Image (cartoon, rainbow, N blue to C red; front, side, top):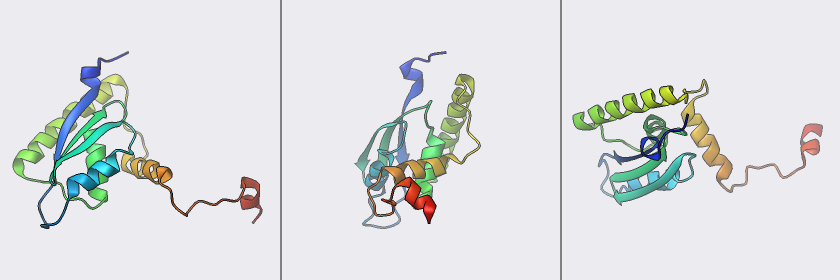
Length: 136
């Protein structure tokens, strides 16, 4: 079953806490989220407000926020933000269940970090051919 784009594509704002005067959590989160599957855009409006657009069939707000939390960024947990976040989580989970996009058994935040790690250029890749790696 195909769902209209207006139902699949979500635009949300993620707010961060002001714990340090020189922090720029929204910019850091935007750079991180641009490499995640399903995230269409991520833009920092202010140092503490991030606007993110994502495809709900590929990811959800809860997965994105859990990944940001594991990254060490501090989400704003004021009462208004917690209530709004709970409402978004519930409606997105319901939509994903109805369209057959159930949560997998594997932790979704681990997949986000693994996907991001694969995309980065770093020196942790073994340059030897596969048969040489198995030989040793």
